[in-house]
Length: 389
Image 1 (cartoon, one colour):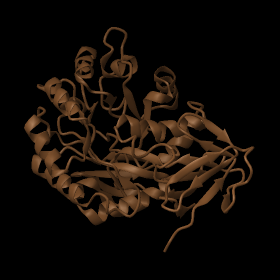
Image 2 (image 1 turned 135 degrees about the vertical axis):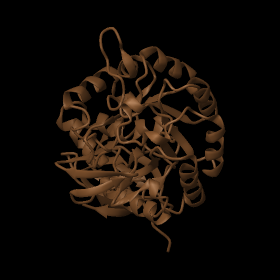
Image 3 (image 1 turned 180 degrees about the vertical axis):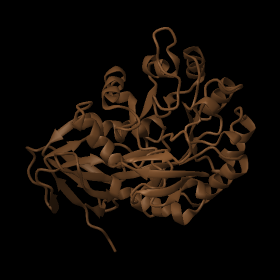
Image 4 (image 1 turned 90 degrees about the vertical axis):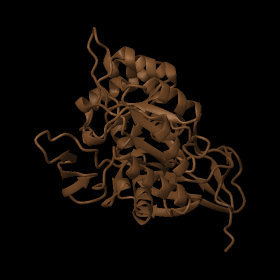
């Protein structure tokens, strides 16, 4: 069936470099963005979908997400990954990096093979690569990761995983102080991929050495890393001080206090803060007992925590659309900055910004209709409405 092109009319359009008031955005018959016509242009011929007082934003990009709807990336089940991709549309996410946990070489290799083989077949939010959270982490800041798999970085392991993933292993989070971290980062970043630093007790100097080797991100900043004090800036100090480095941030109000969210956004500017969910399998599910990888987790009062004596936070049940609304509600960011932090910055920081995160002519028409209170009204994928709130 041949689709017709149409225009979207709305009160506001969030473009990567500017926010336009009113006007018309073309969606072509092959599901891509066309040109934007300003508010004073004559009403275009053809179909116009009028969204009145609502706003149009690029589809959000979640570059750190482990699970949803009872599925976990570590289950290594393509049907589960596809179900996650469809569920993500109701959270405002149209592109994502399925994120692993620490595991054995073989376990992680199997996930790479499955995604490498099937990526592109998903029926919802688009898989734009894989994010490995681990296994090269530090015991002291294990969070909800299994330390029995922690080890020093191995270039040989990376090369094999990348081969299995058909080049889709896009991003890896690792601890800056592990032996061989600098050499590993040089190798992976020269391969055009992204290294984030996290789950780490590293000193400021160790983190800085990794950034000078090519690391460009911090994994869920403040969480599972050495803190900032006036004589030992630590990982947090490096995340705040180093320039042209992007910081992941979980804005659910539980992982990081709203005031601290505001401090990071103010210090780094919204151009360098990437909102992520770190969502686990209980996302979009009722409270109760769940698993995160091999660990029992209890979900209640808006958090997912390990059942053991630590009660560590075990990922989140955050939806990215809610992170966007939260930073606006907390006065940490304006609406356009919040959208930037959940679409443009995650995409650019993970080197997938050529495929998603912005409304630009010729790009796939993956976009959101938002209400002025930042709540999600509708999600479009390839110019087709796929979810209505």
